Length: 535
Length: 97
Image (cartoon, rainbow over the protein chains, first blue to last red):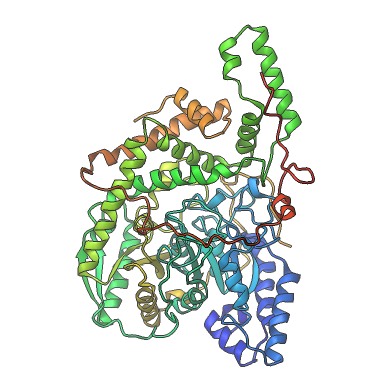
């Protein structure tokens, strides 16, 4: 078996015995990236020399008998929403094309001290807003299972690189499903931890009451390994929680006998693709054969989750993204041109004697902000800023934002009642398998509705996992969604691990070797003309 | 509820965005459709329901009132698009008509 095809857990065992070196493992993935990423487009940047230098340092440590960290020289891909000190961190936005953070995100610092090799930065929807990675300003990412389809999003590059064997471990972020949904569409395992379980310090903010960093890998065991390194209290994030971190990799073999699984009735209703439904029901039969019991439970406010989420998340985003002002960091419009335009407008209004127009004319500073932001942000980010600003504005605050906050509590109470009856909740991650590139770019509401099974987890602050559970007739992966009460990641990982011991969906690999060329790119599916090449 | 083009223009100013004619047109249609969908929430009875802004019932976290190292000026200015030796530069704000 080639190195890139092994699981992280297998590689770690071989690294620890000295049978393989971190340089050899890192090189195997770098070679995979060099061979395939022109077609897949998972990475925004890969620094081969820097990655190999890190691997070499870890190998030296091991050779000289020094203690080596938990990840022992395993490469990890980083979503480009996480700050890496001194390295470009773009959030796939023009706004941050040249931004180099002055510090590491806490999770990045934790990876470094665990002796991970930072492999490169992965593509995403701009500022993590989207479900297809088509909102990246820099490049298109394709689903490794079908290059004419989306990888999902917003962590599309993070999921695609694992599916294509270009990284054994990958870091994503999940605000409304952005780890679980691409994991499902790419056929990998992805976990969204409990809100507060993992530090958000250095995770570029989208919606602060919903954002959570999450690991992706091929297996639940690998996800457990990465979570063990990421989880824990961080004094730099006041919303991280002081709850002890279990050894997630231990106890994965605990039997699921007696596990009470609740099938979420509302997640099996109209709109669910029949092939996805069949695969998920079959997965639940596997759990029953392992001794778990399945019953129907209800989350009665499920039908309001998308509306609630798409008021709260954009509202928080409109506030968080106010920091991009063209002054402190990030993109800034051409000031001379901006001032000349403003002056020309003023002259025209003066000549026309239009006093009202003159009164309404932007000041130079306001125009600087407006031009900068309009040129720096892409269409979806603008749409969400507009939506959030509207929902928070005088006259609409009560009807939209405040109303959504109240429904959010009802959604959480639904979960609390359900978890009185069952241990985990189960359903599909997405209503269909991966859709075609360009299929939803002109219909934002349709794109939002694709999130209906995942946003509730974030609104309630709970952990959720996506586990590969089958394929459609077209050969597209399908994901099983499991959700648990707060801080019960262990329960999810254990159930997913037992399922993966009984099935082999997670071991399948996309047919990329055949050298299939990328499908045609439909118009409008890539918004940025300039692509950041991999180095 | 639909949204008017004038409202979209006003919100764009509040959001410090400058939308082209085409963007204004499209945003009015798209936001209208999205907001119409949001009206679904009106049917939920939320009387006596406390708003929930955050998944954790958080309390304020204070750090000790101690002097400690902060980001160095040079590091803080390093990403500034326009700066001098010690400050961010912006267009003149005072003295405008």
